[in-house]
Length: 257
Length: 285
Image (tube, rainbow over all chains, first blue to last red; front, top):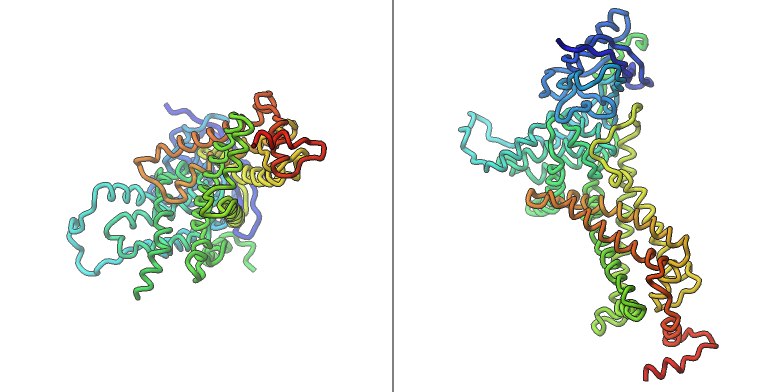
């Protein structure tokens, strides 16, 4: 038998980007502790719809922690109190009966609120557009093992590639820095042989694009704790190293043209 | 107007939602050190490098001043030696001035980078969380860097006025480092200011020492676990070393040496008229 919880929710409601928002209080009753956080919001939304009120808008898609759509600030922590999971993987058993839970959208200048808990994260797309690709010969798919990859490089690249682009790192950062996202997207290509031809241009372009939208890193480490994929801030150091090198190397390369 | 229809309004917001402009274009072509410094990561690199210079300074400043425990002659001799560094290659005090210029440059670059990064971060975080944040990893040191930095910066100015320029120290005699220090710390308010500033310095350099590895991209599984230990040890060493000075003066472990003061006054030609300098000349002869 699963227990049930009665909770008080304080949810950020904002009709649209330009309008002011505020926390509104909702009582939710008989929530099963086996529900996910999003299912709890579904129950509340069903009720609100039934009462003829506007349901709470939030992003969600796969609900298994791999799409990166869902994400909200729960009691002041990105994706809630559980480490290494997205909001959809957070279960209500992490809360106690009678708890008050504050739910807010990600806040950063780069992430304007679209509605309620939905934010515009297109700034992350701008960073990926700036260098999140590799050049390959088009045509038939190459033999899978044609390019040997050292095991360590492959492991490190894979850990970075686990980034789902949810934006929790930015939301958790006191400076709204996009360092962990950019480092993950940058280093998963820069560590692999396939990423070498564009390595230095990628480092410079992605970082420069990041700095158009986000704050700077002061090495608090909040992003790593918030990340649903537990991506390490070690990648931020690797990104810094590549960017510093790139600033010199790109000038050298451009001098050869 | 469609403002009464929330669905249409949201769809319009979404379809026309531009990526917001926050910091503007960072990439302006110019000479590479300038272009590098314009970027946030470049500024962090400058902060780290100037931080290393300043860390080196506070460490050697503390170690040098430990000579206060050997007595007045030793400390004053050490002060004189600093002025005579690399003599005769450089004339007297030239090396000291080169070091001072380097440190001043590092000090101002460190502050300018911190200031403009803070502005960048303010632009990026216009709105606070209504329910507040619940910090998981950030510690007191990392979150108070701006405040501890300001405290240390202001203190450095007072410290210079107190013990280098002498304007904030009534009994100041140029060249008599030992008695200047004792005179200064015998005043309670100065000792308290010194202790507060050095605690702020310790907190500041604890986060700074760890942080500089990240900013410079010095990250390797071989030494990563040692970075925080090193930062802790370094900050503790400097802070404890520095704090012993005012405590020792107030506890009477270090006491004034009037004879040494008179000798310095005679040697540098600032002796009061009633002082008999002949006695010291005999000793010299």
